[in-house]
Length: 134
Length: 492
Image (tube, rainbow over all chains, first blue to last red; front, side):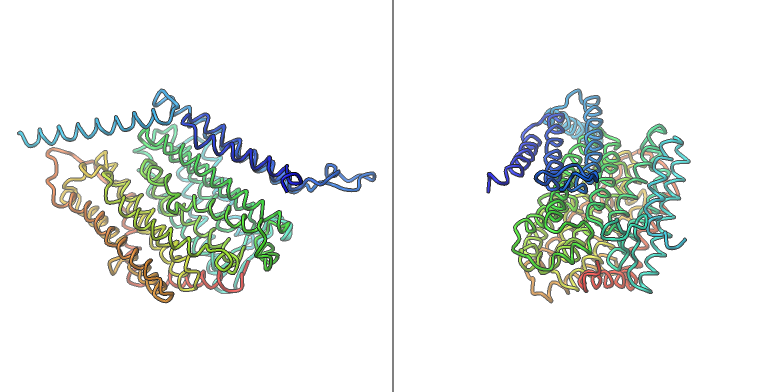
């Protein structure tokens, strides 16, 4: 089972590595790398579905008997475009986050947000006290 | 000409998006979005009317016949979704003119409108397509534009909210892609009707069962089903007001429609709800979502986060209806989808108006607004009672339908969760009302005037929800037709 389907096992391992990187890393850029790896694993899985032993590229020719299935390849061309767009949006957001916070570590960003919230809360309390005093 | 309407509905907003970017004028971009929304609504009304009269409509893209080409299908199950999305877009277009002007600079406003056009095109395409891979592509079009729009929020927290949604949303969409790949590996087709035809047997097929799991987990992320809802509160809470209004009304609803479409007309109820326990899992997660979402909403100190957490709970109600897998349940789910979209859009629109006038929607900033802005506050109370489900609001009608459907199947635990959720809704809406009505307004705080277009959009939604609460024949008719088309004979 493992030996005969080793291609699928490889692809699923690649997907899991990608997913693990997304979950385990706090760095936004590393998250995006993991996300890309995960998507590439899925792309390869589709390509693997369409491949036949000894099949050639799907271009009609007299001396070829078996062809690989072209449809999964076409689908994945579309999915690659989607993946590139996702990565581009993600990187653009990472740049904006770096501009706004000066860091791309998720926990540092969250720390600064909670510091903001505490400051805001203090300001409100102070304003309330002023209102009560006058 | 009318034969091309199914594709025109999606193509018009798709074409307007690049025009918005190229022309770079706030006014022109807004006009383009308004035109796209109006043309979509016109198409949706015409299509709905046509389907109601003479049954399902199929459109072969580029005249490549299914199952080889991509086809668009308009049937009872998606006409309510098309109407809902395009009507929300029109209302948001009216609302967004002044709201976007206040929240975004003139350089970025056209880009926001371009993203709104793309999101509209993506959601309509997702609702109308009859091809599973095409559904993935439209899902990504709508999602990518939504991530971008969320990140355009006023505060810097919006950036991380957008990024997190991007990561979680992409994982969800990729899960859907894996599921579609597995289903394709089993059947060799991507057309929904064709898939359904080839999947009548073989329920023990492991690859097929894996496909069902991957598709549903991927969609559950987009639907924000508990416990995959983590992206939603920050995304809705930080997005620009026009965007949170549009996304709250449509985003999760379209994903729920796609869930129904896959469950009933692609994989088939006997596989999904018979051989696999999707219904029991759905009901369990629905109960947890209703309780957790409502409870979390009670502890938020920002109005938009209260509404966002309440959306997590409301998705639970809809999923409970779908999880029953009966005609009454699915019909109630559709009804609640429509009613909740109207109500929640009204509430987010009001939150946007308050944000514009007060500069903050933290509960502490809302002290005394009931006296300073009685009309806005009245609209909030009416829409808020709709969330609780008090007659004669829209929320009552759909919750009643859901209760009837639950009793029919003896699902008492879900019923208890639902009642508890409604009581909690009374708590979190009541908390806002308490602050707004009974606390003293801060002295000297001068509020800006309310723009007429925003007020008009809000009152249209509020009055619509009241109208549906009194005379629900139109949404009930649409919901019944949808349930019949889904649970009937496949319909494809």
